[in-house]
Length: 200
Image 1: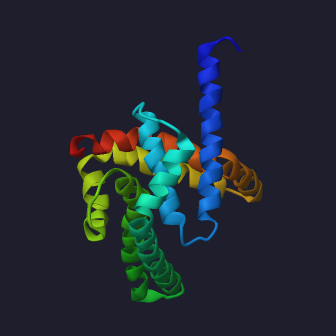
Image 2: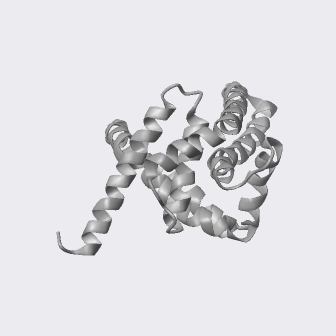
């Protein structure tokens, strides 16, 4: 326990568990998931930059400051995602030429996933209109593709491993509930910070 490296690792793990709990509690109303995610990334981007302060204080400050825009963004994405999911289900049941439309919706779903993953870290770091945030959530990752691809692969792999089978779903639920969301945000923030560096 006298080893400073071990102490630092244990401290970081504790911080991630605390942030994971804060994210879960603040996401419980569901409508506040956007503000909670923005607050999480606000703290994580500071941590990976070596600028962290008091994580709980910083989390709630970011939650309060970004609440209006993040909540509006989340509701927009939620409605768009619901409509997109309904369209995909409808086209999956179709046959013949209508199946070609399914490919179009899968492409749209890919760009939708990019929006969901990147827009809240951008809100955490920049001040801009909601429309510009939606636009930049596509343009900035496209301009810094290697870093954006790392985030997409990491996020996609974690979700895919979680939903492999019933056992992984049960284990995944425990991991996500304790530290998983914050850990993924932490790793993603390393690449996101590099991605947005030229725009800061």
